Length: 181
Image 1 (cartoon, rainbow, N blue to C red):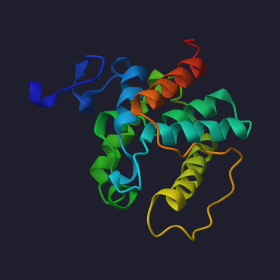
Image 2: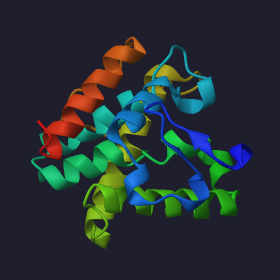
Image 3: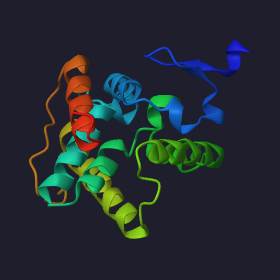
């Protein structure tokens, strides 16, 4: 029934609760994340999940990490392309959401050959995600102006960009990292 399926940007139609690796398309992920604002939209300007993921990937590259870890950083929020973004203070209370997010993320990781990330690799991308968040908060969210975020190895691009530009940059990096370019 149509009410139990979603239609993606590329026209795929499936039940996200029954997602399989072939349902995950990098074009859908790039497009969707480039239209999702971080922080539930409570930022000083439009800054997307895709831009955050690009910054995380660039940070991983600046640290000299493998292409595999750079890709993991780029895709770490890819499940949000299929179930949207929930802010962290709420997400931690939604155990069913966390289970759904984990299930969808597992499918996406399998699709892109990252389903065997080690505990250490997972710790590494999560650290980059947290450190990037702290840097973003200082600039983009009221009340964090005096915070001292951790130093990064890269200079994140925290400027506002048109979503189509961010989508294209995300897609190009993903294709390069997966050998599609």
